[in-house]
Length: 176
Ligand SMILES: *[C@@H]1O[C@H](CO)[C@@H](O)[C@H](O)[C@H]1NC(C)=O
Image 1: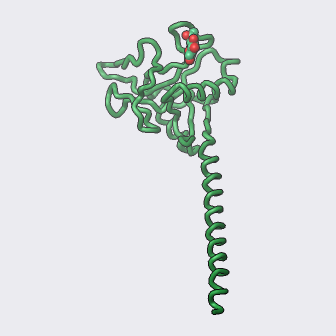
Image 2: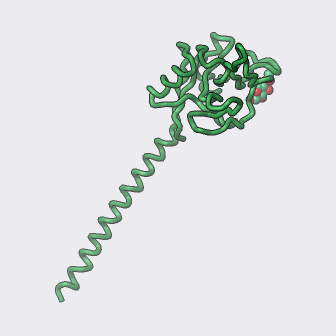
């Protein structure tokens, strides 16, 4: 009969232990979700790189070239450019994104995420797949903006460019 006294005590102990483990697990989850939501950007505006080097540079920071899949993401990029006060000094900006059609011509992909480019933010007449010696040389996508924007002009819009050209660039974390 002594056992019937001991058993509930042990059960309570086990339940308490399980609760502690669960609470710890939940709070750790909450912490990692909070970190995941904290998306970070790096606006490379002090030196220019070709598309491939910009892509590697972003990776060396643990980031990826930026992808602009919708208006909300474009707004975040614009916000970052504005915060940098770039246009207080400069009049034009071309920055590399992760977009390109290197894999298959005319099939533009955000290579950092694997998504097809469906957000229609191309500059007027773009992408125009400029050719040299009958060979398309424009395969990589910049986001471009001229200040002040003119109607029909570059207004945080996309354009295909020669991947070997050197431009500024923006990196992002893919979480969040
Ligand atoms: C630039 O684009 C924004 C939308 O992102 C639009 O509201 C604005 O009118 C455009 N400006 C010009 C000059 O086209």
